[in-house]
Image 1 (cartoon, helix red, strand yellow):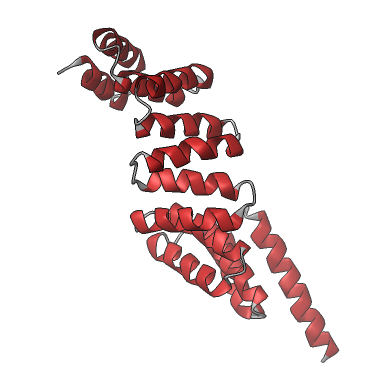
Image 2 (image 1 turned 45 degrees about the vertical axis):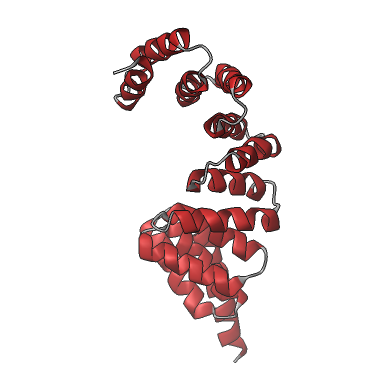
Length: 224
């Protein structure tokens, strides 16, 4: 087994010191190969050494600008620092260079989402959901994005899809409750708020929303 693959195996086994030694050896043996720098960058990113990780990903890009995983790693460095605008470009480059994977689209979509650029986020989150049909969290974020741009029917269906994948997803129940409120269906909303609280007893948003709906319904009964 060569040093690069040995390092990857050590990483998977959480033997990080041994992984670092193997990646160092891989870089020394093949200093022009960007993958040694990418994998060392991934190790440093995993260890939250973001400053050094950035340098390794930049070095990989210097060696070969077409290395999609180096751009993706660099995007993750900025994303972890909540530099969402700065993260956009390397994530876009990763996709452009051929990283046709759900994670790349998902991270780019989230970078736009957290800047409240929902229309820009939507196609990337949609593509991420298409590439990860079994990932409840990807579908949930796509549902949030749909709701933010006012596509309530599509958002409602997406949140139902999330619950098919994970029926214990409290936030999906909460957001379904909110969707029903917008459709003026308070009793349906209450069902989902109750379910969110049943799954997560300290779900403050669901508890607050439930209290408001019950207050509104009681007020309406008194007026009758």
